[in-house]
Image (cartoon, rainbow, N blue to C red; front, side, top):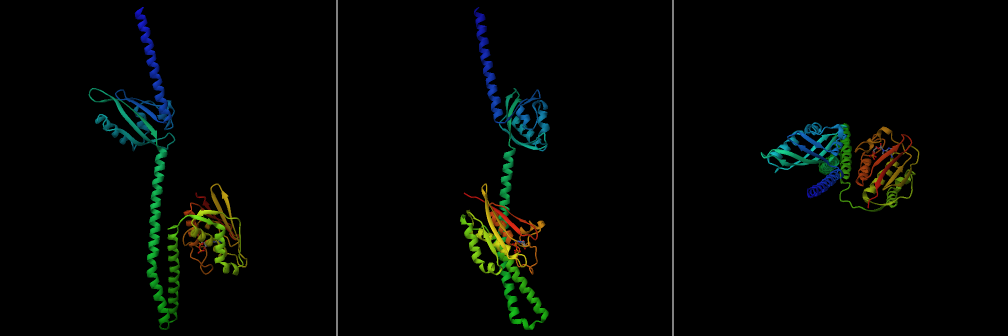
Length: 384
Ligand code: ADP
């Protein structure tokens, strides 16, 4: 009787322990699931490796689609990363676990895409000859993290390249000014003091030299201005209504001469770089006047609309318009669609404008129908 009671007691103890174990296993599994980690359990001498369902689903497979064996992961790991993973395991074994087993490797997803995985494992059982018997570990998907890091690195590289380019443009244009000034002055002196010694052809050529060097001065100055955009500028509250009024005041004569009508809607006061924004409006308004149709007075409409967290500005004119195929080209530095004999200019104004808009974090584009006017649009994000 006593024995029976004892057996009953042992049985209930065993049952309790079994339940406890089951409970622990459940907690363990749910921790792994909630971590979205894949779990593996490698029984080395038997060449059996349990691969958890999350391990398999990380690479797009159902549990039943992949057998539980070490060959499975060796088949789907990126072939270039397999030697690295095997080498890390070998070192972990040879140092009897002293050298930790961690890895960042690529796997090939069922759909062919790359899955970056961080893997950590440990031998938990050795035999008497220090051979590994059982190793467990887990995997987490770090693809998004890797992509974010790659993007951040790419942005850093781009920023460095941008700084380098700006520096280059600044130094080049700055240093070009001095020899150009000399060229201008000596060509001037030659024309003033020695014009009589030259024949007609000589004077004509000298005229070409003067014209070309003065044009080059304009271009170099424009390039220098371009490279200076955004340097040493401070964000302030800018009243765009006031900016347009200043441009109208500065160009009053031109506006009157050409009978230009500038109409503006209610424009916002926003956080921005005042000098640059002024230059932006000035360039667009001046272009709208310059590229007018013959015998038709320019009509310019400046409007702004709030969209989500940005302002969209439009500067519409009734000028000559721009063929669709050139709608991007005109924003490239020194690109023009007309000879200088037809319309004066350097071809730098719109590249200035786009750089100013991008400095504010916005976009710029043109909507136009050739012969029917153009609308230059840009966005300026609302900054806090
Ligand atoms: P620029 O005015 O010195 O030529 P921009 O960079 O300001 O240089 O303009 C580039 C080209 O885009 C101009 O040469 C012209 O062909 C075209 N363009 C610019 N603004 C207008 C406009 N409002 N209407 C028609 N064409 C324009």
